[in-house]
Image 1 (cartoon, rainbow over the protein chains, first blue to last red):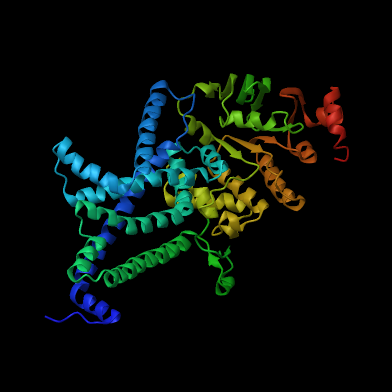
Image 2 (tube, chains in turn cyan, purple; image 1 turned 90 degrees about the horizontal axis):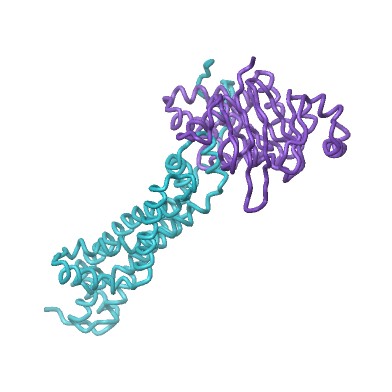
Length: 264
Length: 245
């Protein structure tokens, strides 16, 4: 067995050589939980946010109004509870509580995805609601005026623009999730922090191990924040446009040909 | 007798205890171009928005082809038949010019894509916006946006077109380009209700002028009756400010 080197960098190299694979696996677990959790969380957030942003009209029939109000109360409780308590406490509560109270022995992985998703969902719900409110009322009226229903208006006009507006916040959530999955180590999920704890204990190389861990976390978060920036600028659509014309000579100057007109 | 397109009976609307519309009665026949004039705050826009049910009236009836729209179950399909052009254009910012026009045809009228495109191009040409089909609303000037908004409304082939101060957000040069488009529509016999502050335009384009003041219809008649010899004192006072038309 190789002895532990004396210098700091040597020890880091030693740890990477010996435990590099484990650490990478841990990082992979962290990423998967964070990504899946963020995606499912966003979906939950969209559903909740859209429902909460639905206006309740006095002209709607009474059952629809009561139904919407009840749903809204449930959703508000959900958002407040999950935003208002620490994820670590929720993890313990849900994972152990479900086993003791309901005798449901939740798979650790299921619990991990569930906790991260539902947490992100609670935050995203408010973000989505804000995103919807940020789109000018006028566009909703424009859509209604050509006969679109509320659902069509949301799907084709408001949500595509809301998504663009809340992209920075989605990125924020992803990065928070990459970091915060470390609390899942408390229910035994072997992610990057869990692995680091084990590795640092093996040779009492706390500082060295966590230096590597820090760098790994940082690489993941920087990579994703850059990636999201690129997606964001893609969503902005083209900055320029080309004029269309039927003049064939103008095509060479970059003008587009528009489809053949026919009399309607 | 000409078919009555829209008939409004005893319409009332208030915001809190501020009564904006007090017992409005008027009707629009097929092919009529009605201009609603009056000072700001007289309830013109609210009246127009009530016709499209963007505002819910308090009391009264709005009859569309003798059907009370306030009792209609399917408001969306009624709105599809009543086009509206707004002061602030209200184009969909996430779509290009062509998509702005086709979206209503494909999603509301359920036309197939090719047909929707063909029709949209026809109406975009009518308003002179054909070269700009690939542009996004934010890349257009105000007058161009408004012309696209008109094409979007026209593409739905509405029975009535409502214009809510279509030129109020535009500079004088652009006002001209938008008004010309509307004038051409009038010549083609579209039924239109136009809220406007452009008196010369109202005089030239309409065959029916409604002067509103403080939530009531103060005077109505042909352009000649209203502009050349208004009967009521309020109308005279209002029109004096536009002496140069």
